[in-house]
Every structure is written in C-alpha cells, then in structure tokens.
Length: 476
Ligand code: SF4
Image (cartoon, rainbow, N blue to C red; front, side):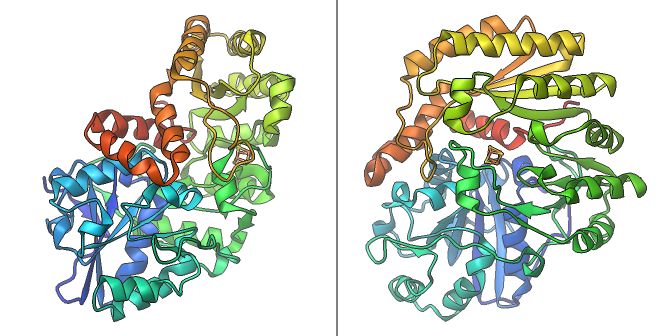
C-alpha cells in the first residue's frame, strides 16, 4: 500500500540504516511524538537513514519509505510504550525472518526503548541486544556515535556499555534513566509526518509537548514514575513552535501532549493563544482539580467536544491509598461546566484496587449517576473502566493484582450497573493481567511473551489503540 505523506524523508546516500519499529498500526504511529522525535533527529544526520515500519503497512515487515525489509537494516529501534507491544514487535520480527532471540541474531542489532522497557528492562532480557532507558534526547548523540563507529554487534555492544542509560543483557544489567533537564534546549520536531490518506485519532494536527513529567505523585502512575520531575518549555518557545508548526505541517490544529496540562499557567495561556489565532486544539485528560469554568470554556472554544478527567475512585479509603484525591464536588463542578458549555464528559475509573469492596464499586456507580443527572442525558457521559495493574517503579508495584476471574466479576458488576447512566468502555482484564504477568516474571518473561506473539495480535493492536486514544480521545 502506497501512503501519501507530507514531510517524509527520503535519502539515496547514507552509511547506516535504521528501522524505527512501531508495534502498532500506521494510524496509531501518526500520534506518536516519540516516533516523530526519533525520525527527524536521526535523519538530520546525513550518514543515517531512519525509516518507519508499522504493523499494518507493507505487511509489517517492510518500511513505509522505501519498502525495505526489516531484516535488511543495520539497526532496529523498537518503540514500546507498554508491555503488550512486545509480542506484536516479536511477531513482526518473526514475519521478517529475524530471530527475536538476541543470541540467535547478529544482524540487525535490536535496541528497545520506551516507558515500559525503561521501567522494567528484565522482560526483554532474551530479546533485546540493548535497552536504552529514559528520554531519547538524553542519549541519542552517544547512540549515533557508537552506531557510526561499530564494526560488528559485539564491538558495538561493548562500546555502547559506556552510555549511562544503556542496559545490555549479559554485559551491563544496569542503567540510569536519562532525562532532559532543560526542555527548551532539547530537540523538537517542528516538521512532523502528516498522512494525506489516513486521519490520526486526534485529527490532523501539529503535536506539541509543553511539559514532561508530573509532580502529583499518584502511587499507581508509571508514566510519572518514569518521567520524573515536571519540566516545562517556556511560553515564548511554545508560541514560536505553534506559529511555525502549523505552517510547515499545513494544519490548523495543535494537539498538546503532556501530563497535567493545567499544572502551570502555561496551559491556559496556550489555549488563549489558539483562540486568538483561530486555531483548533486538543487537550489530553486533565486533573479535575486543576480545571475551572474559564478553562472549560477555552477547551470548548478550541473546538474540543469532550473533557476527559480521571477521578479513578470516589472512595476516600482508596483515594488515600493511591494518593489521588479528587473530591466528589470537584467532579460535579466539572460536570456542571461541561453541561453549561454543551460538552461531553469522559471519566476514567480504576477497579480491583487493594482492599476494594462492593461499597467502593457502588460509589463509582453513584458518582456516575450523579454526573448523568447533571449532564441531563446518558449520551453525554462516557465512562472508561480499567483494572488496577501494579506497575514497576510505582509505589504500588508490590501490591497483588486480582485474579482474572475476580476482575471479570467486578467488571461485569460495573458494566451492568453503569450502562444505565453512561456509555461504557472497558479495558479487557485479560490484557491487563498479561501486562502484569510480563512484569512479574522477570527474566523468565520471554517464554510467556513468545507465547503471546502467536496469538491474537490483532486484538492486542486494537487494545493499544484504545490506550493511544485514552484520555486524548475526541468523540466525533
Ligand atoms: S495520574 Fe496524572 S496526576 Fe497522577 S501522577 Fe500520573 S500524570 Fe500525574
């Protein structure tokens, strides 16, 4: 399938070829800022040519740019934001005739990165030649230097071991998490891949990252644990990026990628700027307690039709456990502002938390019913329920996850009770348990992951799309 794209890079002369393997669909890849950063940073270098490979174009084994087979690249960089990307990536390698097992492979050299390998590289012990932990901008220059001087795999891995963020099985099984200290100085791709044929989930937009990290300290949140302290780009820089970004991408919309968008005044200023420039925008899931009526109005004025918040649980006991206290009144206020502005509301709840009882689940139902009463109709309330999944690096990592049977029982209870008051989306407990197993199994996870690579990759890809859209979704 030939895809027409804006800003795509093509090269005739280069010394080192890199496949950026994105273990999901082409449409999902369009919303990946990490992919855009890697693609444009690596391709700035004239000796390198980085091409993209996704699961549903060219059969998942050939690049989008030139149709080159995955097996023919010098290096494969696998981008994985969560654990179920692993079986999909492995399935793609198998289709391309590459052994997923590192000891059976000399070429290409396969390096993994992203949130979940950063949090727990052990799961990739038998697959990855190396895992690079943390934010790519922190180690890309060193990586490029080692790629350019490498003669063969062993020598490359030995030299890569001097990189602080590199975790190399059998050579150096430790590695710090790389973080950019000053985002204003970090590379940002103003030109981004824009598909002329396929619309991304958020619509055609210039992706902008105003900040990274989150200081709120919710005990279940792997994203904030991996990203660490909050860092922000300056308003002046962001505004100059918007001016240039919409121009070179030929779009009239800005999609903001950030945790806790309104945790600094910059969020509000950016929305005001979009309104002033008559641009559309897309704001991710926001902390309910950082919203006010003016911000909700701004979100409406940039053309977004849904406000997404994640109360997680209305139970005081469970809120104290997860360290995320979103009061009942706060949720009701957000609902009132949504109703007033004729917006949908989307609420994320977590179930299966430690010590959760029926009363806690009933509270979710009562809260959704109260929101429905304010919103006036079931159709304007969307609820997403997600099983609690202990994640590495978080403070709740050592908590037990409920069995699949028990999770399904609670999921059924919530779905049956909630569907009267809202439209429900449920993240499959089976997929949540798989993520948990992958992390729990440590170095032994490889057998389990290989087993998953043989089954329903389509189902996993679809579930990833739900996650990709989660909190960023607009309801069309
Ligand atoms: S759940 Fe949200 S508010 Fe809490 S730490 Fe994570 S990103 Fe921050």
